[in-house]
Length: 242
Image (cartoon, rainbow, N blue to C red; front, side, top):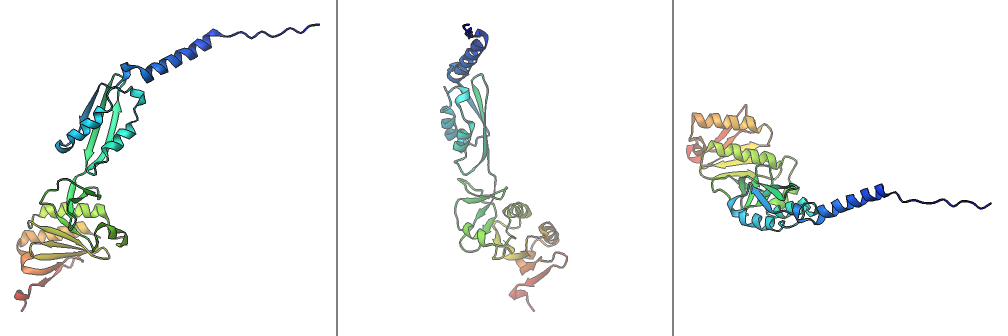
């Protein structure tokens, strides 16, 4: 007896579904309907507006799905002052580019144009306000940060710079970080020895109270020692010594 051969029949519905999916995917990939027509920029500073507009212009005419936001965001972050950037898109041809910039709170002594951000990051800045405190690091600047003790904490230094600026004691404030991480404040013609960064809030509170009682104190002493905030001491100037 002859064996009956099995007949294979094509099922049209699954094939049609597959073709439909492929057609839709191709439409999304190539169709100008989903292409970016406009990019709104949010958060740009005036000095960076033109650069961001050039970056955004490159996205126009490209279908939505073919855009990798990470590439655009990385391009924006090539500016050291840029802290973060996000690119979001809609299926209707629009995109939003948001940018946030670093906030300088101090400048690095001996390195023009290098600022410390409020997040504790050193970066190259186009403009740094003149009134910001200066940070003096051990000889060599930022590379020596690796050799400092664990007492060095950039975020803490950033907060210290902001707190010291609020005292408004003098036009020039210098935060000196010595080998081992010990910290001194040079304000006016005097110096405040804070020692380690432990209990900084308490030390600054004592300093604030003393200056409120005698605003001229830092011009009358050589050193105001606040390493132990509960027992502050001072070294008088030579001309004021008995």
